[in-house]
Length: 421
Length: 176
Ligand SMILES: Cc1cc2nc3c(=O)[nH]c(=O)nc-3n(C[C@H](O)[C@H](O)[C@H](O)COP(=O)(O)O)c2cc1C
Ligand code: SF4
Ligand code: FES
Image (cartoon, rainbow over the protein chains, first blue to last red):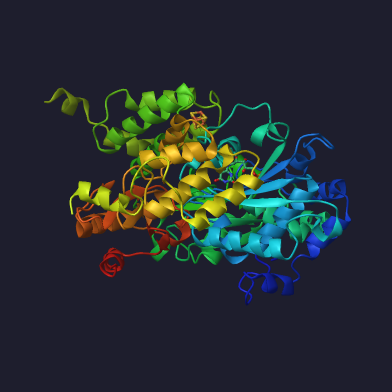
């Protein structure tokens, strides 16, 4: 199977400048700087690459939204906030292949003619942050970051910007607020960041994995990339598998790869041979799937959607049959309530009350109407808010109920118990 | 040492505590100066300034918030809003070892409850508490992006992966 992101993973010193250079690194940057920015955008468009941060928006198309020749400076934000439960792929890229990530970001910055790029990295990350800081400093010394990069006449500066613990800063407009030195509150769209983002200027926010694929695409050509994967989901994707498998880890497979193979071949099957109950295929925010349905699904955007969920960030969470679904949903509810930034009433109140009710249901202290109330909250806060955090709690509630309602019902006190008889 | 003594101890190296005399170390001041030259606005350097303060003093006191406000040319109320919005800025001194145990879904599936129980018992601490001697503080945290190596625990900036309760206790035992 063709590897795009992990082609050079594990090679000696690949995390250093010299190691990356020896593996052919920076040839894509040199090539891109000899092309016009428009040609680079076209190449990435033709690859069919879609954003790997969760939303799956075509990367080249997004870059094309930045106004050409405008007066205002353009900014690139690299989203390395990686906080979606179940997701730990960007960290591997930054720790093991920092110069590949940075080369991709430089090409993106050139394509949109950015003046400055912010590497927004979650505050808890240690090695990732050190690696990216080092990589930026090395490229500054080598003249690949700075004025007139490789004689192209284009100037670029980079800031490695450390977050401070807030899931909502992974949302692109929340991230922009945070870069601006504010509370990480998301902003209403439109205006879209590509027109009016950081500091009121055109801004592109891209996930680390999206950008990490760019050097390969520029080196081999967009058509080579789009030949991988399925008709509509091109290329390869990283999946971070966690939970009840024998070899959890981060794996690169072509889009359309069968979930059953990922679990059984890459991950060595179910942990200790215990039966599987459910799989969440794309990070904690996407709908849960019964294991038997998930195991018949292929890993591309369309197949997963047809089967009732979303590919999201590619965080595959595997749940064995001994787990209590109400307990897991209680954990997720608490998480979203904790992370709501509180700007939108449906989200602030919905996640807050939703979490409290989920908790008492899980503890067997549910009240008569609780399951209906949860259902209503989930419907009410979906699509009525500034960002998708509220929906990110609705989708788990609705899907856990759809497939595992009986587990919740079994925890409800019986009428007799409530009456005290 | 009581909690109050500990606060004083944490303040000791930057006394006298008045707005005017607060200074970061020369390297940190130079780092912020450099950022303020390159960043589009002074305000944009607020998160880095707060990090520099916390790295130097262990937490972000009211006095240092005033300093940050002056440094970034914004109201102190804005700084307070930012400090309280993000979970990683400490508004009171954390322990010398800040122990963060992940309680989210992937870690839960691989035994996080057992890790939390063992760590709480070992330290005699609950969520968001600091030990009387100031050596340890404990926090249950959300996903640390170590899900494929669950369960995980982070001490200061070091992540410990694939833990068993026994290993977690041993790691704590080995801390000076
Ligand atoms: C609540 C929330 C949290 C998010 N967290 C992240 C994150 O940690 N990392 C990320 O890359 N995208 C995250 N996203 C998606 C971003 O908003 C955005 O779509 C993405 O960074 C765009 O980059 P891409 O097009 O390269 O995927 C999040 C979205 C929401 C609504
Ligand atoms: S949906 Fe929730 S997290 Fe998003 S902006 Fe509104 S309140 Fe904040
Ligand atoms: S759930 Fe614990 S690190 Fe992700």
